[in-house]
Image 1 (cartoon, one colour):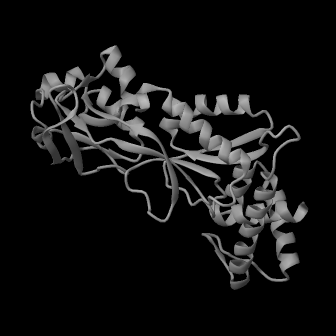
Image 2: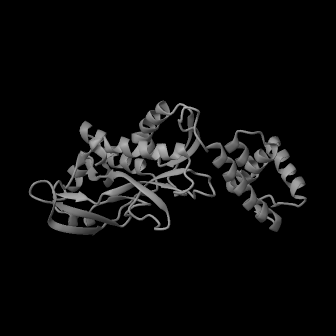
Image 3: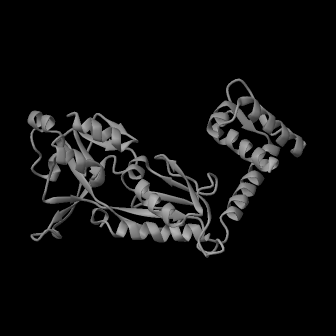
Amino acid sequence: MDRLIAARVFVSIVEQGSLSAAARTLDLSRAQVTRYLARMEQWADARLLHRSTRRLSLTAAGERALSGCREMLTLAEDIETLGGTDGGQPRGRLRVACTPSLAQAALGKALTGYLQAYRHTAIDLQVGYHPVNLVEERIDLAIRITNQLDPNLIARRLANCASVVCAAPSYLAAHGMPERVEALADHNCLTYSYFGKSLWRFHRHGRHGGEGDGGEVSVPVEGTLNANDPMALLEAASEGLGIALQPVYAAAPLIKSGRLVALLPDWRPEDLAISAIYRSRRHMPPALRALLDHLAEWFGQDPLWH
């Protein structure tokens, strides 16, 4: 177990870029991290890191050790999640990654239901906007909102994420209401780094609320604020800075309260897929299979995600 902890510390040092950052991430003291690194180098009988005042870099032995440590940690976590309890219930700890806004709007509730149903399981929820590497970051399941998944990934579609174009009343009073989607090109549009930063896509609603009367339109947009956090854009839009394209689940409360106004009712922004991404269909722990089924059922029962 001591070597397993040392391996986890070594991987964290490399991923975080410093001993101090690894100590904060692992909730250890700097002295403990230094001791574990020294043990790793003692067991490897080689120097693993080049250390300077500015940065750390791996030696050739360190490159080999990093690969071995990651494999060892993955194997240890796979063993931890194998099998079920005597009563046939899944057990084990899963690492799940998700964006902050979706974690707050949905995953907190969905995971609560799962953990209450499967008492012998536990979840480490990793929240962030960057696309995770399942193997390197030892993630069992990543929840992504995108229509551009790598075709080599193994994914299960859970739900749709509908979006809405919205702006504050103060912005509309100063700059006018866009009557056509093409008019968005003349407005200050607040853009999200990971989705349609410069091109927003729309479908025209049909006569009975469906799509199909006007086909698809793509509008080039730009503005004074681009961010990798959609919640920052939502707040800026509600303060009157510009027009934002936001997930319905995030914008709906502000629209209901009157801080934002939904625009272009005859046009529907392109839906995005909410997908669960995982490493293997063959070697899926029972706890992960149960979580996938639970999430699909949970999203499927709420009309917001249809």
